[in-house]
Length: 220
Image (tube, rainbow, N blue to C red; front, side, top):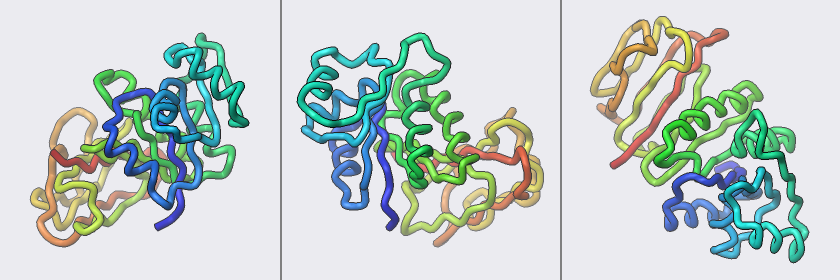
């Protein structure tokens, strides 16, 4: 398994799950995005970078890292045109990180969740692989086909939605609900909650400008 960077954002964090990811031996770099810093501070995990406007991180925690550690801190004005998660993702890309996991990017604020899904397009355009990850979901964007294998799948279910325009000639093979040369539109729920029919699923669509889909692998 390749090394990867973890961004810890301020959304919902399942403690056991997040710690399991952060303590994985393949994690080589950690970035705290605003209130995601609280989780790291609580568990005495020192990040490599801290970014954000710190409108939701207690000043005493930020002061601790300023005064007691050598962790670089990039602070932004709260009145800005991008989220703290986007700032962290752009930092990852500027540092040449190509495999990125975002914890705390989901939760009860659906507007923030959708913003984070769209932010993944920045990584996709940069040739990096980025995921939103929580204990029930692994979310990524694709601009080309993919083969999902049962033994490495995140969960038994997967859903696919176009990000933007209709994706023509979209096909799914090896699934409970297959499709062949379908026009995948952003206006229906046809491709929600599909399942494996065998050992692997093949998702294919033309690799061309504008063809981007959201792939959600899920479990209960």
